Image (cartoon, rainbow, N blue to C red; front, side):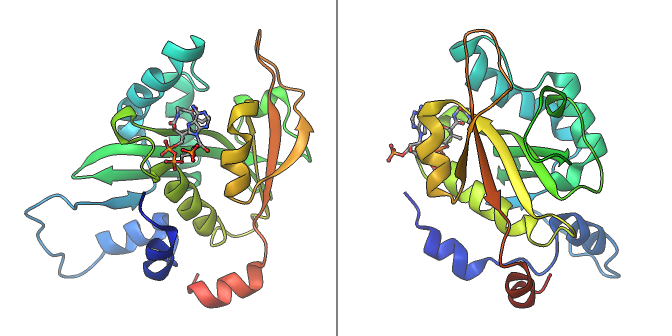
Length: 211
Ligand SMILES: CC(C)(COP(=O)(O)OP(=O)(O)OC[C@H]1O[C@@H](n2cnc3c(N)ncnc32)[C@H](O)[C@@H]1OP(=O)(O)O)[C@@H](O)C(=O)NCCC(=O)NCCS
């Protein structure tokens, strides 16, 4: 498994991915790229929805019969709040992704599953998924870490919230999430833990990350 240390030393973002993309596009002398980048992290766009959904479908339908997000919901969130998503691409292929949306209340509620509330201080992470060929290689942890670092640069954000099944609680705890207790959100035959991450040390982090 690749170590986080390597990523940390290369990482802190100088600017949100969203802004970097725009600025790169505006460069007066864009460099021609003849090969696809080996590894790239960027915000997703509605054009990525099919690739997202294919990974999601494989990850969830065979297991629980349902995806956290339908294709329409993926499209909605990638249209409304692309800046709260992050994709990991290897040679142009999506290998892992996170989709989030804004949420304004202390705890997640059923409406959070389908709504994006703009300008709020919390992001609801709907789904983190890694392509089945790329699992158990540290990619899920690395993408989540990069996403949480990136959120420090999104103005106004203070918390990340998610719900997960009990077996994934240790995975999110390792990333710094704390349990908030059983979620009010239920799906037939499934219960969820709600987890919270404080996008803390913001002033320090911003000063040192060049946001
Ligand atoms: C969960 C997921 C995102 C983890 O990504 P990953 O790249 O495979 O995980 P990493 O290699 O970074 O970390 C591995 C750790 O994840 C946890 N983990 C991953 N899959 C797990 C599973 N099915 N059951 C329990 N723990 C699991 C374990 O803590 C594991 O550590 P271990 O091998 O020491 O036990 C990925 O397996 C996935 O996409 N699964 C299907 C979709 C899903 O369940 N998404 C999360 C809910 S939105």
